[in-house]
Length: 413
Image (cartoon, rainbow, N blue to C red):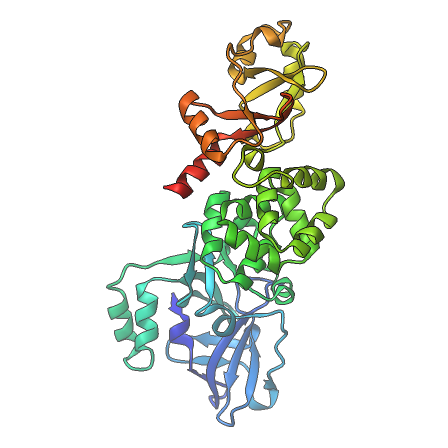
């Protein structure tokens, strides 16, 4: 094991022992082997920067680096921009720790020395983000390397394996060149991903969101505060913002679009698919802080002459969010709400039973213009998971779900 803090400024020599200069950085080629150091950057006494390839490193230790080249074979730096440099691109940069679901800062990088028949390789093991790395950085160049090791060993190691590291690169063009995979981010729970987003700058948030698929990005954006949603969507192109908003629940999409500047909101809607845009426009027509403003239009609805078998078929085709699926709503031919059947009743009934026979005894609904305080009161009074919203003629418009009410209560407390 050797650390970058022990390699920085390492004396580097030619095959015949001539002093080349000090090692100032290491670089990997992510398109070839993201675990091996590909190039060693050395600054000569004349302040020139030369690149030494991994195959030219004979031996390396905490004392010096020995190469297999002579002075005439050295080339000045012409490092490819796609290479990742340890000091320039990794040290002191924010890194997403996908295991602990948080953002940390890279203090040091750990390597494994791998001697071979013709050359010696450095393989990246992990990024060090703990107190030991901070001590090594603090004492670097002040005490002897073996003494620094003794002192830093007092602190418990805190490392992130290199394969679990996602560098946050605000510049999208640079990020593509780096070819850093964000697959591990997409596997995180949306709430954990939202916690990470809240720790990042706006440019870094945009970089992470741009790396995710539309559905994952929408789930993460839905979990962050509305003011942050607005700022983040404002920083994206209208097309990308529309792709994300399309994947959000209609009520959440309407909430965030309502907070955006009118011209931005109109541009996002114009870039959305027609069906999704129409659903959101419909919700935008309802006043804020009313049942209509809180409701979603994604719910399971079926005609009042349907059977359990019909309901099961309809549920299988339901494409909305599962957290809005607590019951099936029965409507008459005029879309008037006539019954609510909890999913448990459907699951336990025979397939040929008419749904209206399973409907709850008391039909509870709320008019679209009801104040949100009334909605909260009804959820508390009747212990509801969802509440149908109707117009003045009893036609079903949408439903308010318990999670939306919980969010309201949390904001009020």
